[in-house]
Image 1 (cartoon, rainbow, N blue to C red):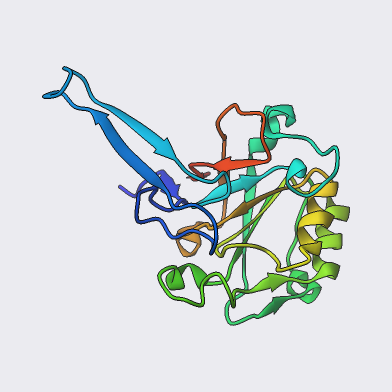
Image 2 (cartoon, rainbow, N blue to C red):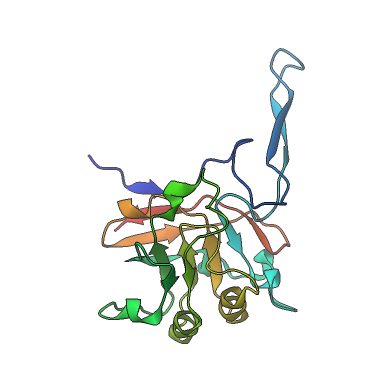
Length: 205
């Protein structure tokens, strides 16, 4: 029997690669069963490391934080769009593809395979402005991609999507394993901030 759920998230550990200049993930066991009678770990990490969600407050003045986003926005029907071997993913990729309102639009670039390479954070694929504008017009719920970001400085794509309250998921994986029809669940911690790591899971429907 095939699995019903597909994990689209990276492992979260002390070895998790982070954006250059960001603090490394630090997970330390403070107490153990032998030392104290119980196990307890301390965690230190950036809100924008590993597989994570960007809220509008990340780039939009006065934008919503994660706790201000309706819970309905963290789950929904998904669609995966193949964008292999594309440096810039342009609007023409939507030709013959039906994207509907409130969908999770996930771009499969294959770049997750380079997670341990030096190029991962420097030479990743990006979305074009025309594509970001079109996705905003279609009023999708969330845009996800299997690389560190949908753009580079000055982060125009972030600003376009987030200004329309379209959430962004970065550093996805296993997008090649998604079936034709699926639903995405990406509920973050209940924290009043601009982004946080999240366990993203797809359910076959």
